[in-house]
Length: 299
Image (cartoon, rainbow, N blue to C red):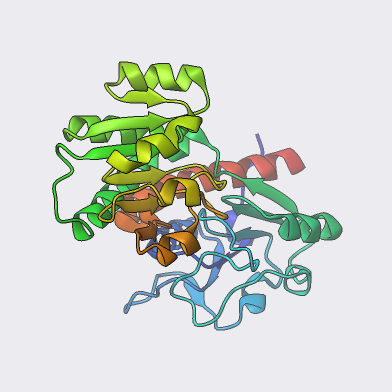
């Protein structure tokens, strides 16, 4: 196994939220040179981390770039709610990285994949790393509960709640809702997922049942990154219903229709920031393992 000299690594971080503060702190603690742009900067700074105003300067000469887990917007911009301007990693910016560089991120869109391919930059996506997702799920659920409490006039207990999709987040969310006393419905294509939801205490339905189910729902949570909560569903919801989209871009909710019909719809992106130290540390464990494997494979 190759011994990694972290002091020789340059790591550039673009975008993100308060989770990236903890990731940057832990990355710098290895002895690597860490540069950052686009996430909230603490008043006292971060030991060993250089904050730069120019995203291209962050990546210049970097062996590794760390981009956020929340997905890339249709415009190509990284998730960076605190950034002064959109951060779009175009080909010119990426070309400044070191030879045989690597990007570690949640997931890459078609443009980023094309740029990386043209520049021989390795892409390492971990949005679908189930172990890491499970580690940050409690923080996501806590952030979601905050959204629900702030945007409803009734309790979750005894409400009619529906979870659309039964991936990692959807499965855990359904269990939480059942535990909180909600009359929980799960809508999923996969019969095995529906059976598991039934065993967990939810009422399971096929995706085709969602429009018929809609009139009785108080809460709708979409976890599917494709348009499943469209006009045929939103138009049937009660006026007081709350819709929360938990999916990565392009999301699963027709927000334009929701606005036109006066339904309250919220895109709950970046909810892992609810507990940035906990979630940032878990993300760094995954990132560090990938960096170590990459370096070992190259030797």
